[in-house]
Length: 223
Image (cartoon, helix red, strand yellow):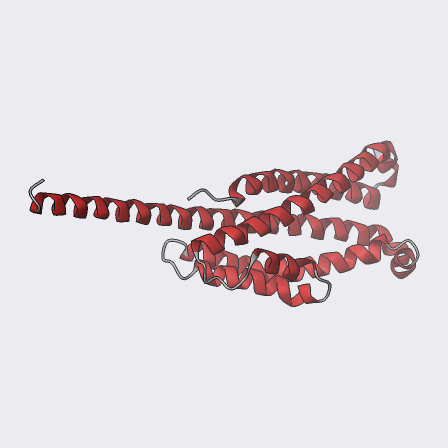
């Protein structure tokens, strides 16, 4: 069967790589800002452009991810109608405030358990299980730090003279977060492709067996 999430997954990876690269550049710029402000003044416009481009890319990444995770769960339901999370259920688990604290963990833990049910995708399930706790906690820590740093009133007051260091840490956390999610997206895509291949092979085998049965019946009847 042709996976609906495959093309969207390729688009998602492009935006993820772009986000990783841009975040890496922003992290370097933040390090220069922290440790050598005079040099930073020479690249300030470049840093502003990079941050603007990052915001646009991140916005596109969120859209691509939303479509991708919806299609991933639609594919899983086609492969396994008894799967417990629907496409819209996946969206609710991720984007509903407070509920997402439980929902995100439930979504990916259900996915890795499903992958571990098959011998061919067991390794993918194990990798996803390994990545999940790291990604889960990093996601909420990164978002919390980002909110504090970007708060125009509370951020500078809280960190005081250490604001530049907090900004550097914020970019560093984002960089690791995007890399970890890139790994998760790759694992999910490979696992679904493996399952889809298994289903296609089973369909071919069933079709071959049916054809052989028809031929045997025809021979018995004298055709």
